[in-house]
Amino acid sequence: MKAQVEALARLPGVWRGGELEQAVREVAPTGHGVLDRELPGGGWPLGALSEVLHDGVGIGEVHFLCGALAHASRGGGLIAWIGAAHLPYAPALAAAGIELERCMVVEPAHREDALWAAEQSLRSGACAAVLLWLAKPLPGAARSDDYAWLRRLQLAAQAGRAMAVLYRCTAAERLSTPAHLRVVVSAERGALALRIPKRRGPPLLEPVRLELARRARRASLPEQHPQPASQPPLVPADLPRPLPRIAA
Image (cartoon, rainbow, N blue to C red):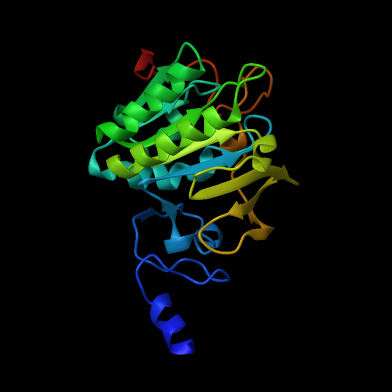
């Protein structure tokens, strides 16, 4: 019996529940070694749906993935920002190594349009990465509808081999998800604390701490959070160099 279990454990796509999946799959290094060591394959998954759960805006919930976004887009694919709370800030993105010409901002009219735009972007094969922010569902909306849509996004990401990231509030942690990876992000004494309740392996309950530069954590309006010109926020409301915008 032990020999049979060992043989099964060596099959592609099979791993022990107490260990991280070691199967070779496409990943994008985040640039944070302490985080990559906790991710199956040593990086953020490509061709799969992931979730970033957070409360509040501007704590670094986008910037900690800039390394992975830059890596994912090196093959020439677009980075789609769908339903973002603020417009991406061009200077900060460029400083993180992301080519501005590859950024596309989509402003959906409502939640269904956002989901549709994300699915089409992922499935098209033209996008290396899709970042999606969803508005709160209408009162009484069926949660099963959300799961069905997320399953569609997972399949679309797999078909397009794209990095798909869904941003939701931390209350969504109690909901089931087809996402391969789920990371809970919070600000903690000037750093970013990341907990991983779902990954292909045991959950990471002890948070990983990332020390981000001050400008990397800023994402609110400049007039609300004054800062030196040398430390631009990531996603303020105004852009010195507009990015392409599409109304879905």
